[in-house]
Image (cartoon, rainbow, N blue to C red; front, side):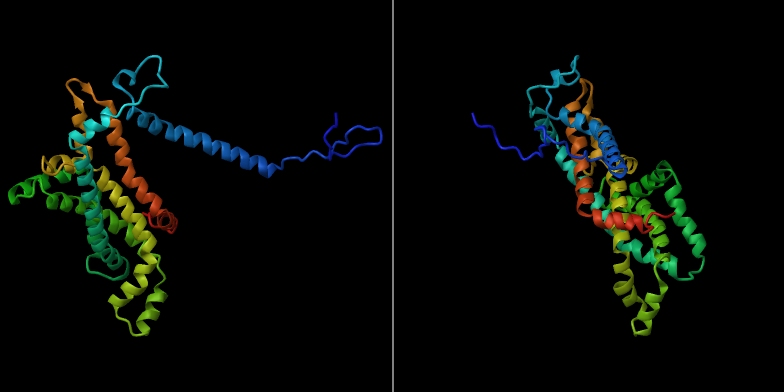
Amino acid sequence: MNQPASHAPVTANGSIKKGPIKRISRQEKVSVFWTLLLIVIAFIVLFPVLWVGSFMFRPDSAMFARPTEWLFEPTLVHFRYVIDNGFIGYLGTSFALASISTLLVVVLGTPAAYAFARFNLRFRDDLFLFVLATRMAPPICMVIPFYMIFSNIGLIDTYFGLTLAYLTFNLSFYIWVMSSFCKDLPVALEEVAILEGHNRFAVFLRVVLPLLRSAIVATGMLCFIFAWNEFMFAFMLGGQQVKTLPVAVPELITTQGVRWGPMAIVGTLSLVPVMLAVFLLQKHIVRGLTMGAVKG
């Protein structure tokens, strides 16, 4: 029987000559260590999310079975409950309110932050302190006056009223963060543009805004997340016509028990818009955060 040809070097006595053993460098060992460590950390962080995600397809009998049933027959009955009880509509309401309020915050807050950073306004420090105070106050201190005012002018349980409420606390945060970033912009670029004949408004549009683009995306994304997760204002100022997802979730705690399957679906769905936005805008978000957009 013919033996397969071997390419290994052979010594004079016919034995296979052993080659030099490749040693792993210290840098490679460190790289492998950190890679394994990051994998472990990612698994620890994501395990609760994956575990809750499995609840979406678990039948009630396998939800908290002992011992744990790792293999089970998946069911879609929880999805039917979520659809039949209007939770998809609550998801849309949350998305609409968070998106519109964030857009208004960016439109109104960017020139305001630039003005605080560049112009010697009268009572500027006092005005800036007032802006900060509206953000530092606990939500319960703000929601009671809002409720009394909105009740008198008919804004309770309306999209406009809740958008206005979200706008107030997010606008103060946005101005606070963006003014810090505006101070770091090079003044020389604006002075050159003015010497070329541009007025202040044109300088703001053509010079300042492009430089602030990443910071606007990063800070706007934070405002969207704040509005998306907000509960107190939505609970007090909303109602049956305007109900956000965080307010609707407690309805899954019924007298017959907690509906864990639908709750897992709602919780997972609430992650989707934020994760999708972060994934699509990650370049601007990372750049904005690393350029000082969140400096206090």
